[in-house]
Image (cartoon, rainbow, N blue to C red; front, side, top):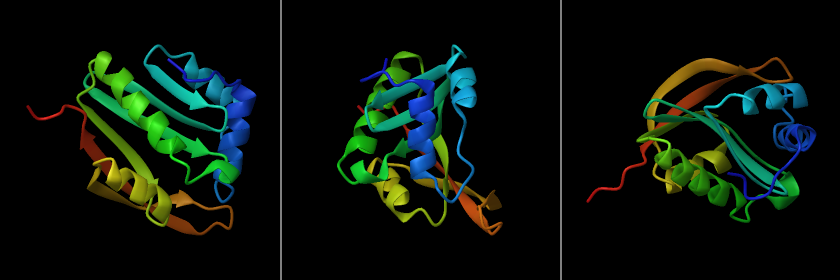
Length: 145
């Protein structure tokens, strides 16, 4: 249910530009993930959200936006669209992992209603070989009545 279809190579290029300090995903990895029936990809020409719905959970695998198009609401739009598509597929919860030092992403996720559910110490290895913790965030996709 993409907003705008991107090729696997374009997904890989956006991911690489957004995550310069980490190993980016290859176009083959994107192709393999997207081939799984549980996968949900929402994109625009400069940003995407990739997740998978298993049972009643949406696992947000990656959200990436080309740096020249960040802070324009694109990440929020692709995530909100993914939430709606995932609810249709039976998801009641969304969860994700985010680097503890990724302040813009943490601010976005907080504004979308995510709350901290856990911590993975030294989870990410940076290109410099330094380590960074991962916050595990969770949110309900079901609106209270």
